[in-house]
Image (cartoon, rainbow, N blue to C red; front, side, top):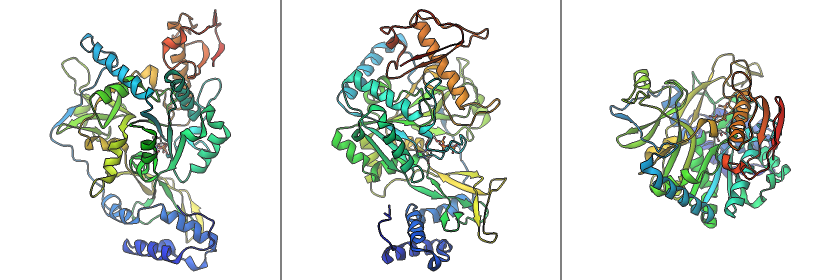
Length: 487
Ligand code: UTP
C-alpha cells in the first residue's frame, strides 16, 4: 500500500494505473486528476492500488451486466459428519483425536485466525465489529472474548498461541489502535498479527460504473472472507506461521462471543483424517434456517447457500425422520497452512467464485455535487466466500457442535423480534452460563418459562468447558434477579 510520506504520486505508478483503468474502460475514475491537490491525488492512488482492476473488468461483464445463474449439479448428496458426542463405536477415535489436538496445540502447531475485515453494516456499530461490547455484565468486546479464550488455552497447554487478525483497509488502523489501547487484553504484542484484505469497488447495478463515495473517493468494500486465503499469503502471514512452526489455522469469524477459538477435538479429528480444510456444523433448526448446506458433489465437499438449495431438497427427510440436508455451516474451520500456501503458489494461481449481492450504497453524484442515499438497492457488491475453497480439498471433515455451547452470533442491531442481535446473544450467553453453573452444583433460579432469573457472566479466562467450574469456589446461593460475574 502507498505511504503518505511522499508528496507526489510516482508518474510510473500513475501510468500503470491509467493503463489498467483504460483497459477496462474505467478512465473516468481519474476525471479531474489535474485539478486535485497533491494529497488528494495520493489518497486516490492509494485507493486505486487496493483493487485488482483487470478482475473488476471481467466481473462487470459476468456478474453486473449479466447475472450468473446457479446450476444445481445433478448428483448432490448430504455430506457426512462426526456427531457432537461419539457413539460407543467411536469413543476411542474421539479420545485419540482429542489427544492429538492437545499435542498439536502443546507443540505450538496451532494458530488462531479471526476474519474481521467485514463492514458490519447490519449491526451499525461505529467502529470495527470486534470492538463491540458483547458480554452481559462486563460488556467485554468480541476481541476481548477471543483474547480471554486464547489466554485460557495458553495456560492450559503452556504455550504461546499466535493470533492473526484479518482487517480491511477501512478498519485496520482502528483495530490496531483498539488492541494497543487494551494492551492486547494481556496477550503479548508480538503474538498478535494484523493484516488488511483486498477491496472491491461497488458497481452501479444498471451500468456497471464504479460508484464514488465522494468527489475523489471510490466506494470500496472488502472482497469477502474468501479474500483471507489470498491475504494470508500476500501479507506474509503464512511465512510468519512457517517461522513459528504453525501447521494448523483455527479460523473463526468476529461475531460469535461463544466460539471455541481453538477446539482440540475438532483440530484432532481434522488432523487425524489428514484433511486440508474442515468445518464445524450445526443441525439446522428448520429446513430454511439461513445457513449454508454441507453437501457432497462428485465426492467433493461443497457448501450450497441456503438461497440456492431447492425447497424440495431442503425439506426432504431421511429414514431417521431428520432433514437429509441437516448440516448447516457456521463458518468455523480448521485449515492447514500448507494448503493455503499451495493454493497461492500453484501454477495459474487459484480463484474462488464471486457472489453477487445487490445493496444500497450511498454515492457521490457529480451532477448534484452531493452524496445521495438510495432507498432501494442501486449497487452490486462482489465477494468471495471462504467455504468455496472446500471443493479444492482432497480431504475434509465436518464436526457437529452444540448450539447451546458455541453459538451466540451478533449480526443485526437490536429490535423487536430480531434474531442474531446483541440482545439474543446476551440471552444465549446467560443461558450457557446458567447451564454450566447448574452442572457444577450451583443452581440458578429460573423464571416460569425456564429462562435464568439472573444476569450471569463467566470469563473464558476461567472456564471454556463446564468441567472447568468444578474446582472454583462458586456462590452458595444465587438470588433471583442477581448479577453474578465469575472472572
Ligand atoms: P458477514 O457476512 O456477517 O459480513 O461476515 P459483515 O461485513 O461483517 O456484516 P454486514 O453483512 O455488513 O452486516 C462474516 C465474517 O466475515 C468477515 C466479517 O468480519 C465477519 O467476521 N468478513 C466479511 C471479512 O473479514 N471480510 C469481508 O470482506 C467480509
